[in-house]
Image 1 (spheres, helix red, strand yellow):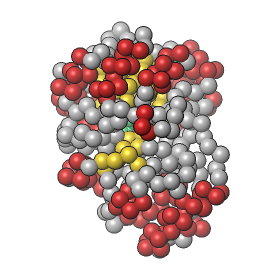
Image 2 (cartoon, rainbow, N blue to C red):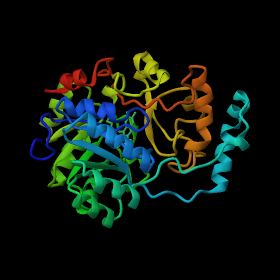
Image 3 (cartoon, rainbow, N blue to C red):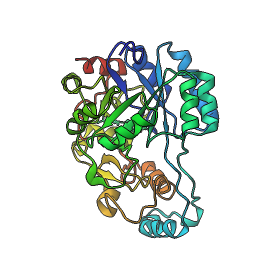
Length: 341
Ligand SMILES: Cc1cc2nc3c(=O)[nH]c(=O)nc-3n(C[C@H](O)[C@H](O)[C@H](O)COP(=O)(O)O)c2cc1C
């Protein structure tokens, strides 16, 4: 790992958009793992300021994570159907649906973000939902970064290897947050980490990183035994003081509720794993009315805000993997220590 990613320990802190900034990334990098900064929801100005802060907080390697999805064309019919599905809740919270603006939610990696990467020259860049167009991948490579991307099937791993990834993140079905699935929408193709990992290791020639359901040193050891070079761990870091996880999310993670997670498309339009809450029970967890990723985000956002104002997580994406047993209110350095086999 020292040669490949420049890190001491085989531990990568999963980039987690919405629940962390440079502080968690710096703490993990300083502890000898690879800290990751989720960049998909940052404007270029916010990205620059986060990178300045990250560089000031660590001189160790870190990973910048971007999305590589193809933005769907907004469709007024599907937006209308989605708002109709949410209408009873708008009434309950006294929200005027006409006041809600629709927006893209998350932007894919583009020319502007490539320019920031060229300026800051991070050691590692990881992508979720495939890879950007070849010219952008080339710019990242020329900027000196190792390129990682998520595969949720053997086919996706082979595609990523062929299109220029330096390593594959094998994301099992247990993983919290969004699935990096990009070659199909068929969820029956998705499998658990310890079924997926050895099959990807056997299929590709590049290094493979295991993600999903890994919560302690035994899990990391098992992943290494199955051929992974490192483990990418997300959920176990969610209660760290360095994370920005909201109070309703922290309470859910600490409760028995965290034992029941499901794949849902209600919060963004794309399949993602979170703790089952009221809106997931009542509308889903998968709703055919939710527009494509990431277009479902803007219509549900005001409900989330209204519910959170009353300390309720009923409409929040409470992202969490199937194994929250590693979640502790410990510093990120202590969590890293608990993960080292
Ligand atoms: C709260 C949360 C947010 C996430 N956001 C991202 C993201 O922005 N980019 C990404 O590549 N993966 C994201 N993921 C997925 C992780 O990269 C990783 O696959 C997952 O956390 C591993 O499973 P675990 O949560 O069981 O450890 C997120 C996961 C969580 C829990």
